[in-house]
Amino acid sequence: MAGVQRGTLILGGYKFAVKDCRETAVFIFDNDEDIDEERDVITKTLSVDVRFEKGLFGDEEISPELITGEFATGTDQIDDMIGMEFEVKNVEEAEEREDTLYVFEHEPLMHYKLKILGKEGGQLHIQISGTAITDGYSRPEQTAPFEGEFWLNIRT
Image 1 (cartoon, rainbow, N blue to C red):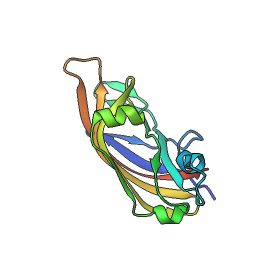
Image 2: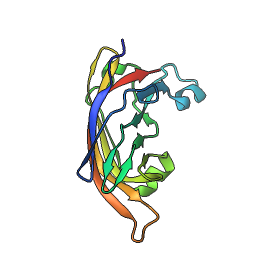
Image 3: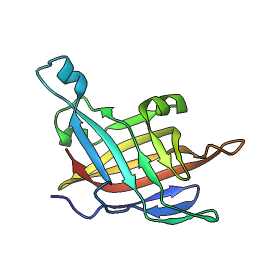
């Protein structure tokens, strides 16, 4: 059973509350590689899309959005994902995976770690931290550290 989604993103020292809406969720799907290879066990992939409430970032009011591409979990059971940690080591990998943070535009994440801390009902408890590009148009481009901890509804 889905519940109220909650949590906080801290981006460059500024806090943003999770927006409890349909677009915010942890998405768990069948792994296309397992399907294509006609494997006996079809494992799951996990991706995250988190919308945040409006807040101040410097002098600007923004509504950030954090999106990760799919991670192969190697399991077909959601409960087995508890404790898993995923890492994206550089901006090239993030661009290829389409991992982005929307501040003023969608920009790739520079690097990050995502960990599944727990499960309660129809929600996963997620922790994420890393560095994001916050303004790719400025020279030099602007970056900021980020961290967040969220309870998000599971969508399959």
